[in-house]
Length: 126
Image (tube, one colour):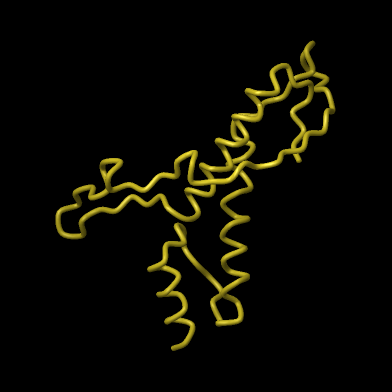
């Protein structure tokens, strides 16, 4: 649930929040800049190598809004551009950590790729 004040165009607000949610989930699970250790060359420099979420990778999200008009502008509007991207990475990573807690995993770097999850489980066993 977000408070964007007076919403002038609900469709644009929904799109901004959906896009931010997907961006944050992508940061938590997929996106990773990789550099070659020997040369320093960027290895994930194209969309073939740098995994980004697509719109069809996710279900539809149900959003809720509370309207508390902003008092510092005549329209009562508030910004909404980054709202979805703020809470989604920690929510996803905390969910993964909660699932891995019975295995002794206490920390996990983003993105939570299968390889990193496996490494965290192996480290917790040691």
